[in-house]
Image (cartoon, rainbow, N blue to C red):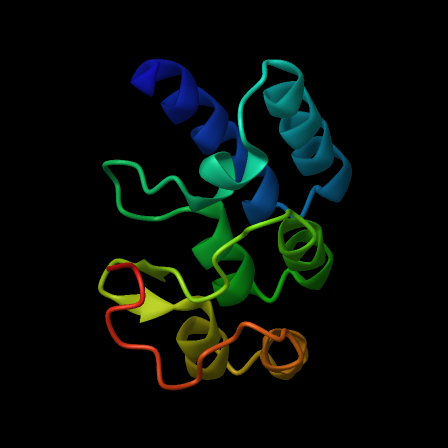
Length: 117
């Protein structure tokens, strides 16, 4: 199972890096058709410590992030390596549109520290 999620997660990360919204959506649909939870794929933090959620916030991929936010139960406060949230990455990388999108989410925690616990 871990190998399957690693392969899909890597493909999703690659789609996010090039801002390929349609391929990212296809991957999420295929993942769901395999009876897996889409949020687990987006939230998966592989051995290289970067995931699609973090990458979308770092790169300013608004459409990809909107796709991810639409997934029921997605953790908008998830921390990735080195313990930063998507909001912190977006601020650090000066992606105002991503910051605004995250701040509009009702579950965002601007004081998040240890939110994955």
